[in-house]
Picture (cartoon, rainbow, N blue to C red):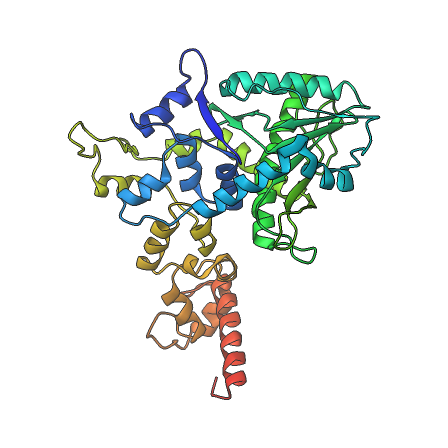
Length: 418
């Protein structure tokens, strides 16, 4: 299983870190882990999530205070199943885990090249563990012929003025390079797994790959690669193909799936680059905005639900139905999209097709050929549409034509009038 902790930078607070602390208030800072970074990368246009994640707000508590709590996160049964599966893989000197590692990574089955498992000081704090991981990774990369397994290493990743500590399940180091190994409890049935779960695991693993790339580049005194499709060949650098170890069929025998995460790595890299410039988003906030979730001694919230709603709505969101499974504020943003009649509630595909048409009412009016809802087109509407000078411009009329064509096809299929 994965854990992470956010630790503020040592020494005097930098202006950005101070600004983020003021927005958060005295409430505890929420750790920014690989799951949160992967969810942020899955919706690159959402300023709201970027700001709240950078601030370190507990979005689950925030959603509850806004009156729309989300049944978000893994179930206790899934967590327990994952813990049991991982413990079985690592029992008896990792005997069960070695089977898929041999099949996919070529770990030798004899004692000519035994698998080394260094102590990573798991009982220490995250900073000490990250230092120990860096030392163990450098030592393993310096011996190309050796095989080394780093069990639950701790990685550093600088994010928005703070240090995120990330914990993958394992790293296998050989030939001077390393491979991220993620242990998941969802099954692989007939050689295939749930695409949605594999995609989520790939986005999470891409965060670890990015952290390892930056660590290797810093150790070599080089800049990290901008192109995720460039193979970084530095001591300790990660391969962009990760290994997902899962139960085979409905049993406990492990199998592995190799996943290329370069596409997810590109999205994650772009999002973190945006978070580096989070000042631009913060400067757009109205004066006095904060997301303080703290309570007084008597339990009275420091900010009312109305104040928190105004603060959240001051940051633009990019809602889509996918947010319901990836973001704690998904139900709040969906309710706002429905109240405002926004087309985002219909999905990203529909939103992209409709161009500058912003509401469902406008889309229905355009599909029915009316310039505005309930109004018949005037004699100059055809010319205005052609020149883009009427109620709708060329983009809107193009969307209207597509909507009308789709409505005609549906009517034809149902045997009714268009």
